[in-house]
Image (tube, rainbow, N blue to C red; front, side):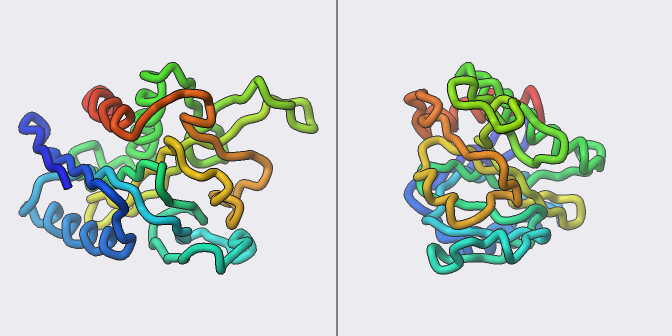
Length: 223
């Protein structure tokens, strides 16, 4: 685990090597969020990878868990539906004081989406948001169009947060080079008509460290 504290914003950045146990991550976030809310700890952004698993948000539908025996399934208690976490995917847990950011939850979520979009832009990837679809999407003009003639779009980043006393936790996941077949055990975020992609699937030789650097570079301009 590597740690760094940005004195200008008092945000501590933690980067964990290897795979982090999901329940251990939940415990860490619960404790840190409480400490931030009490004014006993700095805000924190935690970058990590999990072993293969599925998480169910508060809006998850049982029918969207297609293969419940494939990987462990956890109740995440965050917003959203089912999602996958696993090696090759950068999970970004954001423990930030939303009071300092205007107490506007919708704007805060939009800022997180724009942070992902700005990060992807550093790799010349155009990330976009879509009304009614959570997360960040990319167009795939090289793939066959949908039946209705619209361009194929695939999800590259998921987002789901929870607030306690106006401090956020959970956060985002960005696909660098995960096994995309692992998403087949769920309907990701309840969306059946669109696929999932990653930076490497888009043909970019991006490493986890490359993404971490880009996340750090773009954070201050957006968040």
